[in-house]
Image (tube, helix red, strand yellow):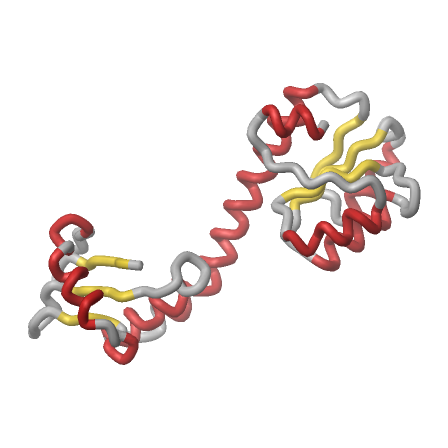
Length: 196
């Protein structure tokens, strides 16, 4: 399976035992493929422990014994997201892993939006909203965030959040490049630029 996945461009960490797999969890894998039969721990127990460490980890169990529905139920009740019966067909493995990773990305984005939605919409103040946007973006997507409003309602151009704008060189560079990176918004707001 490692060779199949590496051929498809996946970076693979491999563990020969359950304890090694738990140690690899420190590297924050996006997905884990767990064989039910391991030399030191039952694969079902390993899956439960991995989900305790990382509840949103996508987990795929593989076993030659998945013809028994009770074993499939045991795996799914322990947090397994999907299972494959061995022998594994290469294209089925690759397609399933890609689908699981897309699902994980969509779920992560939904969690992010559910978390920041109330924060961003909680104020009618442009500066408070801009600060909330920056707080949501940093550190998840960027090291820093500045918002430049070319023309704010009833006033001149504004930079947000003002309290964090401590680099005049960065401010000048951002102003010079707004024509390139400007995103149009609906009125009454003028174009907004997001910069890292």
